[in-house]
Image 1 (cartoon, rainbow, N blue to C red):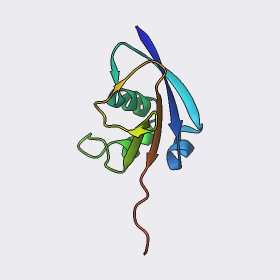
Image 2 (spheres, rainbow, N blue to C red):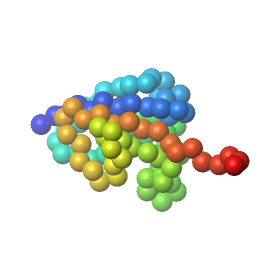
Image 3 (tube, one colour):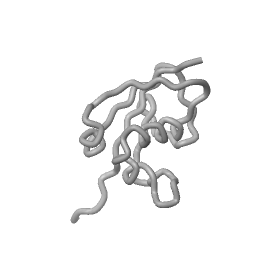
Length: 93
Protein backbone atom coordinates (compact mmCIF):
# COMPACT_ATOMS: atom_id res chain seq x y z
CA UNK A 1 0.00 0.00 0.00
CA UNK A 2 1.37 3.39 -0.99
CA UNK A 3 0.66 6.70 0.68
CA UNK A 4 1.27 10.29 -0.37
CA UNK A 5 2.32 13.03 2.04
CA UNK A 6 2.39 16.76 1.41
CA UNK A 7 5.45 18.45 2.93
CA UNK A 8 5.54 22.19 3.59
CA UNK A 9 8.73 24.02 4.44
CA UNK A 10 9.17 27.33 6.21
CA UNK A 11 12.05 29.74 6.88
CA UNK A 12 15.53 28.49 6.00
CA UNK A 13 14.29 24.92 5.47
CA UNK A 14 12.39 26.23 2.45
CA UNK A 15 15.59 27.83 1.18
CA UNK A 16 17.40 24.49 1.42
CA UNK A 17 14.65 22.51 -0.34
CA UNK A 18 14.04 25.28 -2.87
CA UNK A 19 10.26 24.90 -2.77
CA UNK A 20 7.45 25.75 -0.40
CA UNK A 21 5.60 22.47 -0.89
CA UNK A 22 6.49 19.03 -2.23
CA UNK A 23 4.70 15.69 -2.27
CA UNK A 24 6.37 12.37 -1.65
CA UNK A 25 5.07 8.81 -1.74
CA UNK A 26 5.96 6.11 0.76
CA UNK A 27 5.31 2.38 0.82
CA UNK A 28 3.56 0.77 3.76
CA UNK A 29 3.42 1.99 7.34
CA UNK A 30 5.34 5.23 7.73
CA UNK A 31 6.26 7.49 10.63
CA UNK A 32 7.31 11.11 10.75
CA UNK A 33 10.86 9.89 11.38
CA UNK A 34 10.73 7.77 8.20
CA UNK A 35 9.67 10.84 6.22
CA UNK A 36 12.47 12.93 7.73
CA UNK A 37 15.04 10.21 6.99
CA UNK A 38 13.98 10.20 3.34
CA UNK A 39 14.08 14.00 3.16
CA UNK A 40 17.62 14.11 4.50
CA UNK A 41 18.64 11.50 1.92
CA UNK A 42 17.18 13.67 -0.83
CA UNK A 43 18.35 17.00 0.66
CA UNK A 44 21.52 16.29 2.69
CA UNK A 45 21.79 19.96 3.67
CA UNK A 46 18.76 19.42 5.91
CA UNK A 47 20.61 16.97 8.15
CA UNK A 48 22.06 19.53 10.58
CA UNK A 49 18.66 21.20 10.95
CA UNK A 50 16.72 17.97 11.47
CA UNK A 51 19.00 15.67 13.48
CA UNK A 52 21.46 16.27 16.30
CA UNK A 53 24.86 14.58 16.64
CA UNK A 54 23.17 11.51 18.20
CA UNK A 55 20.76 11.20 15.22
CA UNK A 56 17.82 12.25 17.41
CA UNK A 57 15.39 14.88 16.16
CA UNK A 58 16.60 18.35 17.06
CA UNK A 59 14.60 19.98 19.82
CA UNK A 60 14.48 23.14 17.68
CA UNK A 61 12.75 21.30 14.83
CA UNK A 62 8.98 21.78 14.73
CA UNK A 63 6.95 19.22 12.80
CA UNK A 64 3.23 19.79 12.53
CA UNK A 65 0.82 17.23 11.13
CA UNK A 66 -2.50 18.68 10.13
CA UNK A 67 -1.82 21.69 12.43
CA UNK A 68 -0.77 19.76 15.55
CA UNK A 69 2.81 19.31 16.78
CA UNK A 70 3.98 15.71 16.42
CA UNK A 71 6.96 13.59 17.40
CA UNK A 72 9.08 11.34 15.22
CA UNK A 73 7.18 8.19 16.12
CA UNK A 74 3.82 9.62 15.00
CA UNK A 75 2.21 7.58 12.20
CA UNK A 76 1.66 9.17 8.81
CA UNK A 77 -1.33 8.22 6.70
CA UNK A 78 -2.27 8.86 3.09
CA UNK A 79 -3.09 12.51 2.46
CA UNK A 80 -1.44 13.87 5.60
CA UNK A 81 0.25 17.24 5.46
CA UNK A 82 3.48 17.82 7.39
CA UNK A 83 4.83 21.31 7.98
CA UNK A 84 8.49 21.70 8.94
CA UNK A 85 10.14 24.73 10.49
CA UNK A 86 12.58 25.51 13.26
CA UNK A 87 12.03 27.42 16.46
CA UNK A 88 13.46 30.87 16.65
CA UNK A 89 16.11 30.93 19.35
CA UNK A 90 18.37 33.62 20.69
CA UNK A 91 18.02 37.35 20.44
CA UNK A 92 17.64 40.06 23.01
CA UNK A 93 14.80 40.99 25.29
